[in-house]
Every structure is written in C-alpha cells, then in structure tokens.
Image (spheres, rainbow, N blue to C red):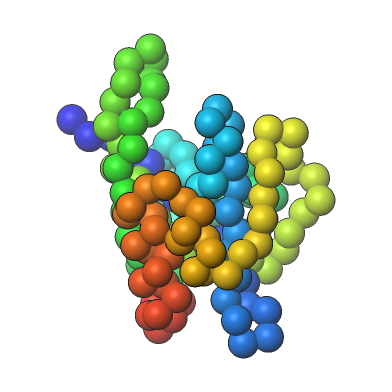
Length: 138
C-alpha cells in the first residue's frame, strides 16, 4: 500500500522571473520542498500550505491543481514505506523570519533551472521544469 503525502512548491515573482523556494531535509540536508502527512479533515492543498509554513516559514495561496508527484521512502512507525508525494504550487505572499522548524532547516530562493538541478527526486525535478514552462497552471 502506498501512503500519500502532500507537498508545496513555494514560488514568487521577482520582476518577470519566477523564483522557487527550496528547503533542506532534516536528516540528509538535501534540497527539497515542504511536505507532510495528510492532516485530518484537511484538503491536500491545506496540508501543503501548513507544511510550507512549518518547514519554510512562508504563507500564500495554494493552487487547486496538482503540478506533479514523486515517490519517496519514509520511515513510519519503525517501518520503511513508499510514499506518493503530490505537489501543489504555492504563491508566497508572506515570508516570516521565525517559523517552527527554522533551527532544523535552511531555505533558499533560486531560479527554476537551478532548483531543478539541486533537487534529487526526478518527479520533483520534472514538476519544477514543467512549472517554469507552463505558468498557465498558476
């Protein structure tokens, strides 16, 4: 059985350019995006928005449509499980200097092309590349 997680792809416009926000994972310090387990009585989009705040200190408007997905292994209750992570765009309107996981993560704003190079997961890389091209999904 595959478990689901939901992720936010935080972005903002700088002049006419899109910038993507990446954060480091807690254990391996790899570049990724905020993601988490479904929240009871919450939509996938609400989960993505809450994770974006907790893990990256950003708030904003979440897109309704999923822009991609990737699979990853997660430890849950001492077992390794496969997770299907669905990605939603999040237009950042507020960035906070303090947030719940500030001590555990680093965040950077980068151009989509650089973001795609920095992330390890192929599905996430694809979502970032497609996002850059198809900004009609925003």
